[in-house]
Length: 500
Image (cartoon, rainbow, N blue to C red; front, side, top):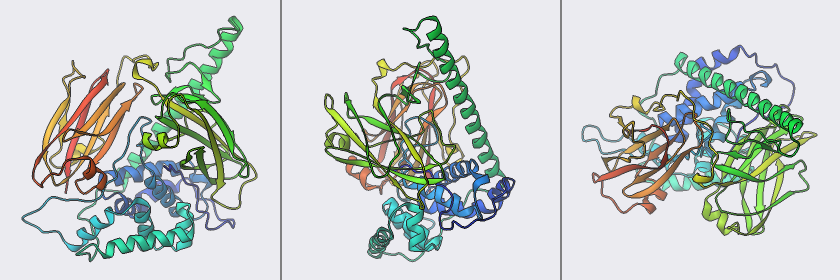
């Protein structure tokens, strides 16, 4: 697992003119179309590509005044690094993303052209291999530059490129690449990005107010009764306290261990007694100078995986930060099972050189909490509107929704097997939903707050993992798609549309 936010272009450290903040709108309007193309080549899905680009631009805005020189390499790095590990969407709820390869249904009026064949072959490559090819042959970066962007060695870049090209060579009928169409850009995209920036600002304001409320409640509570000084905070979170700046309860989890790593040479260790193998990791990164930090998590049973985060002098000191997890099976194989005494080692590696004088990575281990034991926040009087995440704009889109008075009722539909489908589940309240295809669960979508949440999924018959799960299906066979609520306290809806 690797979740990434990226700093400015490290290929040049000599002083350069600082990018004026006023140029942001001009940059989005005039130059984001090229970045959208990169996003499309990576995701092979225009809706996901637009979402990826807008998320990357919103991230770039937070550091726009600190960007030196041309901002495009900075934004491109954010975009590529976000893509390589984009398993959660922009909502802070469980939102796994099926980034899946291209597969279109037969068209009796127009055959596939050679470019589409190559695009689908490119879509079948692993993420890192695909990212290397896109950066090398579309962005025309050198191996050293690609290694810098992805945080890997030049030798690994060469290996990924060689393996990817070898796979493409054995794929029949490859001649070129050109998708059929592209969504509108310019002012519409700028407005959407500005909306995301405004939402992020509002979340930061609410988060800051929540932290102040918690601290004030703690102080007042201590003054009145030093023994019982934890006061509930129903405004912004499901927890009444912070543990080393991390909310005790968030995203369906409870924090069980925390630590701060500050030294590349010496790993930091934390220990706890596990009650489940379903764990998540939260990280917050800071540094005296802007940099990238690679964080490696290991236990006695082996390395669990890595995360990469962008660190700045004003990095967060409270909140969840960046959240990530690994498959439960992998965690179990590493020896983290219920009742086990676990010692986790956290090591740091500075990706961007020269290394800053000071770095600090706050991290927390959080375990999944049973639904009945989770302290949900108070339900507000007004709930947000459900959001299709633009899936309703696709031709042939369907909306499925249970009755308003019965959110626990499953919804189902049948579609022909063969084309790819994009899906979006939207929840405006706490709930846990299960998405199944042909009777096999492929995704779980959870929301542990009363904010708008949801999950995106791309159903692709050409995906190897999906083929292993599902029974063998002939093209044209009707398959049943079902969303079953395990818990649902408010309305939810599903949008489904074929991708052509």
